Amino acid sequence: MSSSSQRAQIQEIIDTTEAEDQSSTLEPEVDGDHAQDGDAGSDKPQASSSKSKKKKKSKAAKVLDAVRGKNEIPQELVSHVVDRVVAEHGPNTAASNEDNIRLALEQMKIMDVIKGKSGVSGRGKKAMGEHKFWATQPVPQLGDEVPPEDGFIEPSKPREEVRQEPYPLPKDFEWSILDINDPKQIKEVYDLLSLNYVEDDEAAFRFQYSAEFLEWALKPPGYLKEWHLGVRVVSNQKLVAFISGVPMTLRVRGNVFRASEINYLCVHKKLRSKRLAPVLIKEITRQVNLTGIFQAIYTAGVVLPTPVSTCRYFHRSLNIQKLIDVKFTYVPRSMTLARMIRVYKTAAQPQLSGLREMEDRDVSEVADLFTRYMQRFSMGQVMTLDEICHQFLSGRGRMDEPSEHHRRPGQVVWTYVVEDPETHRITDFFSFYSLPSTIINHPKHALLEAAYLFYYASDMAFAEDSEADSKLKKRLETLMGDALIIANQAKFDVFNALTLMDNCGFLENLRFGAGDGLLNFYLYNWRTAPLAGVSAVGGVEPGKGIGVVML
Image 1 (cartoon, rainbow, N blue to C red):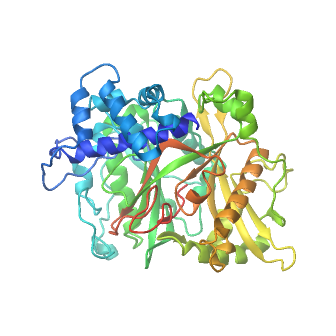
Image 2 (cartoon, helix red, strand yellow):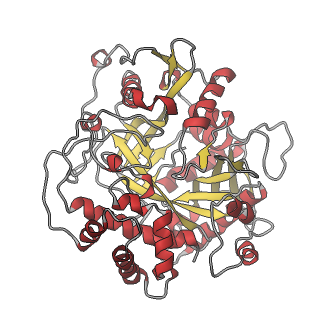
Image 3 (cartoon, rainbow, N blue to C red):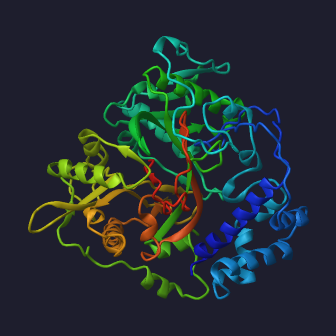
């Protein structure tokens, strides 16, 4: 078992312990703090709860209480985690070893959790608490009961009733609508995100969005430039904050409605005290409302009021030596580096007959297959032919230049179809996109090349008893195995996926390892029961509640 898998098992126990601790004590009162600023929602303030309830403390909560204030990982906590790991995974798992558990707890910075300074996976104490801003917004509040039926929280308004003037900014700042068609302005967004956007907890990696990626992500059919919203310094016109929205059609269970996909909330690191993030959120909401749209979808790594689902990141190592060099992964004690390289080696060529890159002529068939397949999931994106064409073809890079190692200059998305050699019908497709990360302060490597699984579909899902006979699972394993082969040939270092759609069925067999990161999905001004993500919900299998991939 890999060290990341061991940490994932142990982290699940700690997550449960921490959750029990929070639910077993007095819920926090509103602390009077203002909204904080930060990257991609990591700074978003949270709402207050209406009531405080006192409950009997669990054993887990007592363990955490007993060890708060100590400077070493206490034996009481290690023993508690050992007991839980053994109970859930059996006595012979490597994750039940005390040394492994102590090491994992240290890597997860559990001392900060014990001292009440932060939560697991970078969730700070304040992030897990409650703040005033989200209490003013039409979102389900933490602790609310499951709604009896789906629907909006606040009704839509006619345009004339929507606020007509922009929200005021602090002195010395002004609003700016970014023109993504202008290379100079798209570079400004790139520079801001590259230096100030999401980092991991150890500040070793930071997302690096290319100009080509931003054009692909921010300019789908029907995009509005007013939804690419920036804040500039009045004196020198420097771009210091950004938030974006793109229009989409969303289906949540049986309801289909227009919504905005909100993304890339970023505030310059030196301006985190200016409380710009809540103003950015309110202003992008106003701009969206002016177009007659009153629902939105967004994601964050932190817990805000209130996730509709939570998914876990999984990682499939490709370039083992590099990943070890940059400390993205480690050689397990039970394995040598040479053996690890052999275990994770992919085949030389894809295995499926009829596999080829998607072309313009495939759009109609891919759209039909996508539409039917996405009905399998509780929440999904509804796409037109133009949107299918944009999402799967527009980011193919410079088509007039030669492709090297399955990668063109400027390419950000890879889409492949399987064409039946006899009928010439498209039976399957898969796609993944490139989102590299800057490797901060590393002497040898500057960039981590990461591929992210995007959308896929297989008509095997519609065969009789396909799931009961595991036909779909086997087909997806082969399909995604070929995706890994192509990603490896395209010189990616790691292939990432979330526990959504049908992913949970093939991750383990394709040697994906559980990561430490969680991604929470949120709906704005829409109330619905929780959807199955990392865990099953209401009889729905893990992953199958979420059929939306956020860029």
